Length: 112
Image (tube, rainbow, N blue to C red; front, top):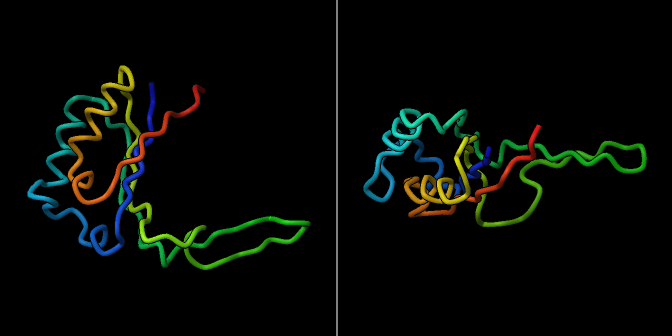
């Protein structure tokens, strides 16, 4: 089953990028998941301040700067994972270094 991991946290923590987080190296996690063959795609996102949110309403396209909601936590990255089941997805997300300072939302993808 495929899962989307949304890497969420404080923008300042996410801005530090692929440097040790909570004593763990994010690139080590990427390398482990790639070696296991379960990480299919992933990347950091540019800061939420650079986002544009669009809402087509009543024939108009409404554009707003920034993320869609006012919140202290933002989505800073993502990983697409191919796991045997939810237990494997939870285990992989628990090892993600950003889980120690933010959160990892595990969301199943629809079958194609």
